[in-house]
Image: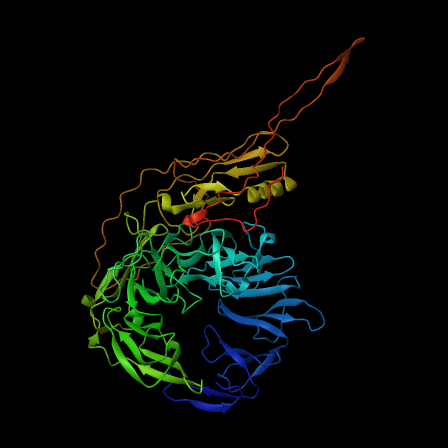
Length: 640
């Protein structure tokens, strides 16, 4: 698409139609359901809508800084943030009639950013910072955020959503390279802290959601106070626990890798980001290196790595960094060298075990590789000429490389798991997928059903996380966050004569395990009484129910009903033997009682020791939650 000319294809790039653009547009955002509908800005921040793929445009708004749309319950809703040309106000507005009329759902004139998700819409205001969320796209409510947002800025431009509707975002100082990662419930109304010391590399927070495995994410974390060492961590349970990546034992040439104490590190913003795709079940690919620290030999030792089991094990796929893409539901892998010019494209039909090549007519830099649909075998290649620096576009069609269509015997069953020795249960259930075997040279049909069965599991320790006001340390203990807990008690006592505490642990939102403990006990305390309260004890989890029998696949995959994923589960507590941490410290007060009796003056001094309930002001453990270290860039002295 040129600046004043539109080239349009409706047959996957086989042919194009050219027509002049009435008003030059900058980028297109297509409708979630209507293929011919699109929104676009002009150079003067005017927003336009088309319903015929760009032949005719209608101007619907001015001074637009951000725009997007959703399709909620059969209704199209357009969202915009506009600037007032005479003030610094940025207003958030919505339209449910395709831009004919607009309304302001939130009475706030300082909006920074919004995010349109699968299940919710999130809007971020500034000065002060407030997060709002809506599940119907029209009515917005304040979001429950565990930490006061005065401690850092929410990076709205990195609102990222996984396929169950959870929103991930980062809070950090705009001038510092370290931040904290947060994740919401499936409705986007409640957030919890999942990681500290998240690294910012090249002005972007370095974390990536994995679309091919539910609940999985990869993040790069600073591991010391000097901010000069980085490790890569992975989670399989929406950020409850984190682990380093297991390094492969041999390289792509068959040579052993000797690196004691090392792990695999994948770097997003220094190269092509880690990539996964919803239809490529269990597959993750990325560029990185092996070492104690991610920054070891960062340029000399960067290679391409792939995992077929959701990040449990990894294989070195290619020497040097590459740009990559999956096709045919993960059965086709296409890649090209990324940092050096090439005249060769590589492809594999067996998950990278063997590669074949396609020759280009020239040597150039491959700067982009896209598949028209992850279900098919047609790719669009963008290359940059070495001399003129002009871009050209290539079409690659791999539909003729398969020997036959896939049969039942060409599929295998696979279930996500977290690397433990127990059953393959993640977030309280075992999902059995059916995917193509690595060594089957066949074409997966477009009606393939990947989910073969879903079975709920018995509850165990992995199904519980820390309550709001607590954070998990590297020993998986819930440590109190004193600032948050003090603020919580202060807020309760401002509007009531009592405040409440519950146990440190709760069942994870969205976890579907069965047989867990009873709901957590909630204890109320009088705000005016000096007591030494502590959270009620964590109830025991009953003996687990028998693990379901091993699943035997049926000849044809059934269409199971999904497991209910609810975030309204009561707050049951955690497994036993989790030590509670002291919530009080003693403070001695001296009182003097002076009295008289009859005509005799008696002067007495009585020192009364009273225990006044107060949460300790000491900072949390220096090393942090979720197997990733935590520290403060500037530690301040605690004030009594």
